[in-house]
Amino acid sequence: MTPSAGQRWSRERPKAPGWYWWRNKPIGYDVQVVKVRFLHGWGQELFVSFETGDKIPFKEINGEWCGPLEPPHDQEAG
Image (cartoon, rainbow, N blue to C red; front, top):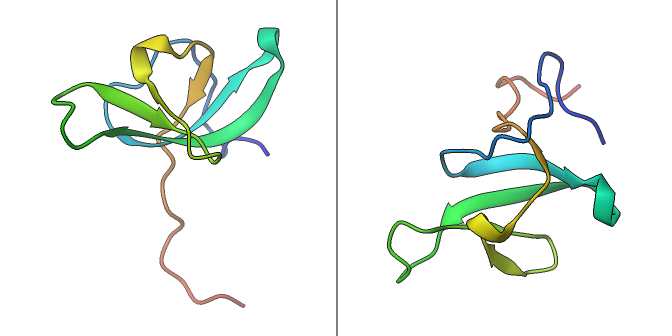
């Protein structure tokens, strides 16, 4: 999996909810697509949701980020 053309990896954390590429090579995590979001009842604290179902406070997540991911242009599949 790789980011879309023109996107670059950054250690700067996202500032808004959305879908992002995430990786943390030093501790062995490969590239994953994660959802950065607010959880009901937690106010304005952002969380990261992983495909495993784990939800971790955003401030506890290190690594590199790329995104937010944009949906493809609306076109018919061919």
